[in-house]
Image (cartoon, rainbow, N blue to C red):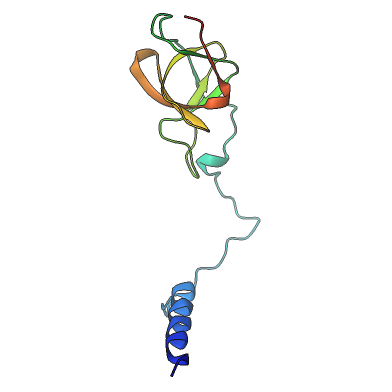
Length: 122
């Protein structure tokens, strides 16, 4: 019968979506419960301001505005570790559409929003 594979596929899909646990699901937290904010939802206020630029001879780009800095490629749940001030100079190492992997003073590798970078005139 041709309906047998469809029935098996539907059963597997149902098990994947609902799970096969016999334990009751944990209750959803109420709106009035106090929950600490996740790192991705924190505001830019209170973040440390990172200072120090690459020497002029080593830099390739300058920041055009205060910019959040990430240690890993930004994504869901990845919070910035600080703010790099406008005018800071960096060496762009791996350009990307949204974020560029850069080296800043002290040979620290960070990710910076590509739109906030302007090439230097060295």
